[in-house]
Amino acid sequence: MIIHSITLEEIERMKKLIVVIVALIFFCGCSSDVAENTIAQFEGGNITKEDLAAHYKKLKMESRYRNNPEQLTPEFVFDHALNMEMIIARGLKEKLHLDPWIRQEIHGFMSDLFLKVMQDRLVPKIDKENITEEETRQFYEEHKENYLKKALYSVNMVKIDDREKAESTVSKIREGRITFEDAAKKYSTDEKSGNKGGFIGTRSLDKFRGNWRPAIENLKLNKVSDPAKIDDDYYIFKLTQKTEPYQYTYEEKSAYIKNDVLYDKYRKEWEKTYARLKQEFEVKIDEEKLKGFYEEWKENP
Image 1 (tube, rainbow, N blue to C red):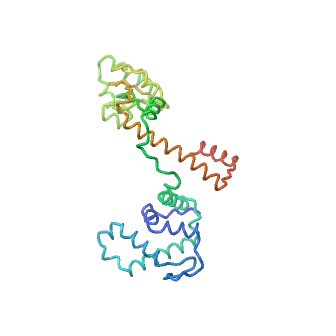
Image 2 (spheres, rainbow, N blue to C red):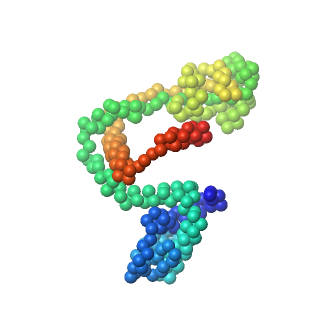
Image 3 (cartoon, rainbow, N blue to C red):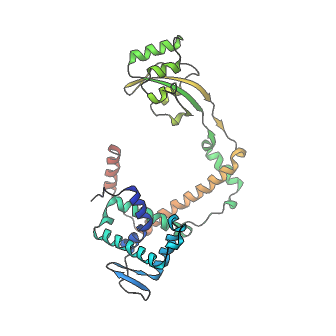
């Protein structure tokens, strides 16, 4: 059962107002015992004074009530909480919590919330001040590529869907009968870059489209390339500017490196934590079904 009629705005509101209680009802269950401080009961749960206090605290943080605190009367808080519970009760009755998309929303919110509560217990705080210079220097040497400013290419392009027309355009540009920029405006089938004289950006090679990179990598400064057939079109490129790569020294990036060391330490600790949790909760994976999922994903991501 997939719920198609729920809007993004409704989902955001649902996440903010009811998803925590939905999750707690569904995953934790509700006690059948009626506590002394229970104010209201209903099929599947109850509302206590503590619930209302927490509800009030949450409502106070919302801008519409933060700016109008007089709206948050005890009566309003109780009615709001009870109405919310009724929406949840109806949703559970309709088994919305079993819909995979809604379950993903619930689980995502729960994991974020529980992480905030348990973070220091799952991974103890690592003191950045205890990271030594020896550690940071070693990290720099092992990850120098992280502190390399890549070469930047400024490239213009003309995209043409016919080989003969592309070759003719190259000849006109090289012979000076038309500028590259005017050729892009006049002939390019890529309207966006054509309007800019063929300019497609200044960035590192890996930020250009994958099938453009072989042609761009071998461009000579201010030289017009031969037409390169890519997919069903022909591309003419021109490199107008290129900055050379630059390797930052340890001294130039020492502050950043220390932060990276800290992040790396946390990453490794979280990897240990997740491995421990999988063991604690006896995770069993059907490798054949997982393999099938991976294969299906590759075919239809």
